[in-house]
Amino acid sequence: MTIAHATAASGRQPVTVEMVDLYKQYGPTKALNGFNCTLNPGEMVVLLGPSGCGKTTALRALAGLEDIDSGRILTDGRDLTGVGPAGRDMAMVFQAYSLFPHLTARENVEFGLRVRKMGAGKRREAALRQLDLVGLADQADKYTHQMSGGQQQRVALARALAVDPTVLLLDEPLSALDAKVRVNLREEIRRLQQEAGTTALFVTHDQEEALAVADRVGVMRGGVLEQIASPTEIYGSPVTEFVAAFIGTTNRLDARSDGNTAYLLGQKVPLLPGSATGEVSVLVRPEAIDLSPATGDENAVVEQMSFLGAHTRVTAMLGDTRIVAQLGPSAALQLDVGGRVHITLHNTPALAVAA
Ligand code: ATP
Picture 1 (cartoon, rainbow, N blue to C red):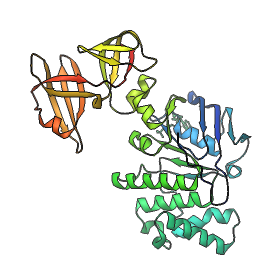
Picture 2 (picture 1 turned 120 degrees about the horizontal axis):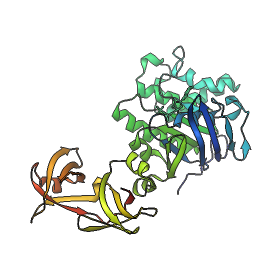
Picture 3 (picture 1 turned 90 degrees about the vertical axis):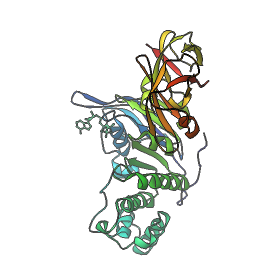
Picture 4 (picture 1 turned 135 degrees about the vertical axis):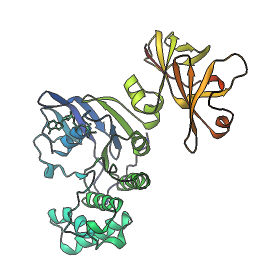
């Protein structure tokens, strides 16, 4: 894992965050049910998971905005239980609309510095510097209603980073923006977080976003962390069916497994550690399947082809089994809807789960 160990402008060293055995219940709902997660210094961890799995509760618990029923939260070994949000010195960027409408962009960025009793001149200078870092030097005197959604979120980011927080918390900061702005801004958030060297927790339900910005992605389910790993590992080596299915599209194909190898469609596929044995389902990514025009008596038939720009998604039916493959432009050009195809499985390790 490569993590920037930059030192923040103030000279603050990036902190380690430990969330240990967190429990939080709302009535009958166990929002956090033994949640454990450690953020390494300067690391961006993205919590990903379906609606209601506890992502926001974990983030708010870390911020001190939500009391936990039990468990411990520590930064650099210091127990924060009982410390209020202000004492935690963290900063948060929310989904949207969190700027003060009666303040300009600069005044919004100055806000946290004013609370921290920084003098007017220094405050103004720091705010302008931070706005410059997010590419908004020329928008300093604008009010929220004069800025686009993306610009407002940049101001919110500048406001968060201006106070040089111990931890940067991002709660779905991009979900209200359109696709192109979202991609640009996520790259910017990542760059600024790395430059500042701030430990960060980012919550989203957008898997592509999570894979794009994270040092490590934590997949949550039912108030617990099901797996936490680098984007490539969580995509390529999911430890459970839930993680495999939640991140990316997955085919579920019947097979026989000896624990190391699966046998299906007359072919062999190597298996990931922890795979089931016997009659199993193998979870195969669309990009690990090739389809080519049939040359013999193959009976898989192309049902649908969707052109997606860089690649084409092709659905084929083999009896009752639906197989989704992702093909490059030249492979896709060889196929037609209704045509019979040959299926080739790549040698990519896959997870086998109980059938
Ligand atoms: P989403 O992606 O939809 O924001 P999430 O993963 O962030 O979901 P949380 O907001 O952490 O999930 O909520 C976890 C569970 O706790 C949900 O079932 C939610 O309904 C419940 N919950 C959260 N906050 C409260 C509250 N203040 N009162 C009652 N129930 C709550």
